[in-house]
Length: 449
Image 1 (cartoon, one colour):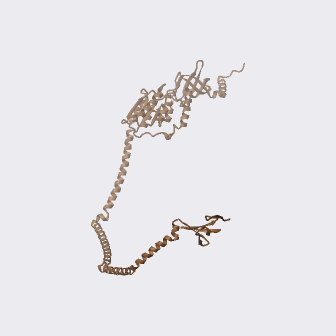
Image 2: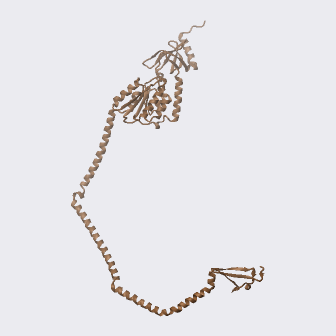
Image 3: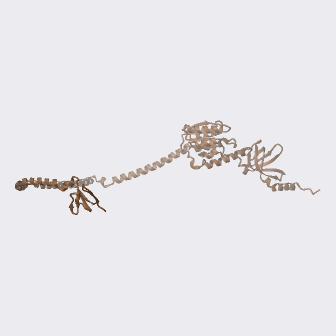
């Protein structure tokens, strides 16, 4: 029989074996929570069990802060843990790093996939988000009438801005029909067109309880809303797709009401600030105008109005003199032109011109008397010229006839023609032709070319 080993050595040996196994350094385990306790330090102690076995488990505070739900006894969970042995007691324990509810894994996968898709489409882009109105007159609220969210929002609004009106659309915030109800309420608020900002949300819960605000119907209704939307779903650590697509995300419903309104005190300070700025502007303008008036009051013209009037009178007198001189000059020029015209129209001058033209008329009359006896011979000459014109060859040509000339002699009959060229005279010119054949009524003679 081998030498007996102390318990501590056996425990350390088993611990070394467990710590050296890579599979046990990070293993996923599914089971039911029992005896769950969270201490003031933040550490969580519980037992994870199934139908036939159980293991102690611990989740230190640094890892427990990542929980998105409140673990309770009887809850089925999946943990990612390291398996090792606690030497003091020899217990094999699970040191849990991550925990999520059973069945939630598929929801997270759907959530992450849809988030990536919408982000790629630009639905979360900051440039498409609208600013909240500074002084809303009416705020729309979409939440459950039974939850604490409505109470928190309404209380905050009454305290901060009691003058703001509220339009409330009661909906179910979890369950099979909740997403349709929330989406319809958002669209109804937009159809009213009297709300300046819209708050949608609910209190905290598990991913299943918040899932309505990840559904496409709600996300699309928020995206299509013409009213700025504040998403206030769950607690500060809870995030839904509605938070990302909304114009503003609030950590809690109370924070949403605070983001939507400014307190009366803040508005009073804004009014005081604007009043002070307006006072400064008016004071500056009044000072400027007062200085201008002072300069005008101290100007020489206002101090000595008589001197100013004398200056104006002197300028008027000078203008009057220039006007009079201009008129006199113009009148003198016109008078000179009239005198010159009158001189040209003087009667004596007219009589002299008349006598000159009368003498010329008598000269022309004498010449006419001398040539008057020539009128008879002139008429005879005209008649002879007419008869000559009638027999003129040019007159014949003018009537469409032609003359033929050969060797400088006009051809009167065909027998005068001989071989060679002839010239044909027309009214407006001539042409040269060649004789090839002649007909004199007795015989035909052909000229060889």
